[in-house]
Image 1 (cartoon, helix red, strand yellow):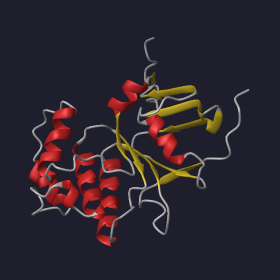
Image 2: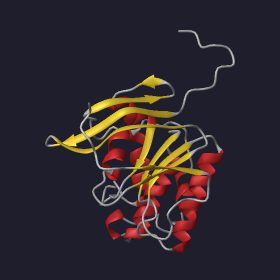
Image 3: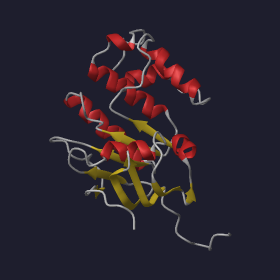
Length: 218
């Protein structure tokens, strides 16, 4: 269908009736929400509310039990979600025996990225200069989080899904996360994130999505 002239652009991410159940027990949903370019959405909810599960569904790592997800107005499956988003989870996702620079090169090759980005500069930008050859297993939890942030920044996906991005970071690391989110949002990207603790939201305009106890779809 030909779009109407001057019609508003569709949301970057939209969910309709999105549900997830584990062993036939509802975890979240049904959810209806959307996220446009230049926006951040903070997911709230108590322990066990399904915040991490929601991000994993949106990243294509888990299949939804019901509902639809749209990227830029088009319905997508798990494969399209995985290719259209960049996910930062609780685990760093690195190969323990590879050095920091080797890990970035590996993930770039895995995604088929031929941009020729400066990987050493990416490490410098996240405070890992001098650790290019350090195996990931020898890095601290905070350094591994910084390496994951470098990988995130190198991906070209407009949608970032960040699960507890401030975890294991010192004050400088928290400031780094805030800077990266600001940079991404200002460039027209979108961020959906969960947080705990004193640093409850990044310093950008942010809306909230509160996960209430799941209910069975009608």
